[in-house]
Amino acid sequence: MTNYGTFNNPNNRAPYAKKIIAITSGKGGVGKSTTSVNIAIGLAQEGFKVGLLDADVYGPDIPRMLGVAHEKMRWSDEDKIIPSENYGVKIMSVGLTTPDDDTPLVWRGSVATSALIQFLDDVAWGELDYLVIDMPPGTGDVQLTMAQELPISFAIMVTTPQSVSCDDVGRAIRMLKESHITIAGIVENMSFFIAPDTHKRYDIFGSGGAKQLAKRYDLQVLGTIPIEMEIRERSDQGTPVIATGSEEIKQRYKNIIHKIYSQKENV
Ligand SMILES: Nc1ncnc2c1ncn2[C@@H]1O[C@H](COP(=O)(O)OP(=O)(O)OP(=O)(O)O)[C@@H](O)[C@H]1O
Ligand SMILES: [Mg+2]
Image (cartoon, rainbow, N blue to C red):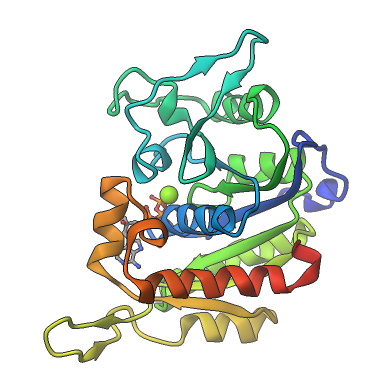
């Protein structure tokens, strides 16, 4: 068993960032990257200086979701990596370092975490109000390294309503608590579906999961995001919903952001 107590005094590899937000979940495919992208852009729209670090070294989705997948890594004269930028957000991802989108990333865990440490140390992020980190699924090497190398200001948990997902999220919540990382709250993604033709509501992944988790672990639900075709389509096209989508969904993300920075310790 890992002794999480060793993370009481983490290093600070990102002194240039005022606040560091980890977007996480014990589970894969629940919408961590989608949430990271929309929250990062939403914070930039509020006038904050924002960086987005894709910590999913084996499945780096952020460049595609932010429409910069065609860009290649560039170095400055000072030997710093120049981050990509779109929608007012600075972006770094392993996906920007590979020659083709489908280059297999077959790395040992130690190499993967070294790449992330290099992104923290060697990217010319400039001064940031928020560094948002899109975590990979699970509670493994990357999560432990981040907890060791960064004073994470708070985490946002992403879950779907179904209970299997919530068991995994429960494990991740305990890992964060044992690492003394504050959890700002839970985003319930893929919360429900409104049929566009009949306007009938379907609870495809069940209902109430985030509420139950919040009660069990004494956390707040930051908001719910429905299953919407446009969220998936816009992610695939690199035109995130908070920048280009319908008012209704934009507003849902904005409400989440307002809830986050209405907790004054988060600003
Ligand atoms: N609310 C939503 N409505 C419709 N599609 C969504 C929604 N949220 C996410 N998706 C889609 O579901 C898929 C998985 O989402 P995403 O990549 O954000 O999950 P993830 O938790 O980051 O996954 P991974 O664990 O693989 O990193 C993507 O195709 C995304 O576009
Ligand atoms: Mg992801």
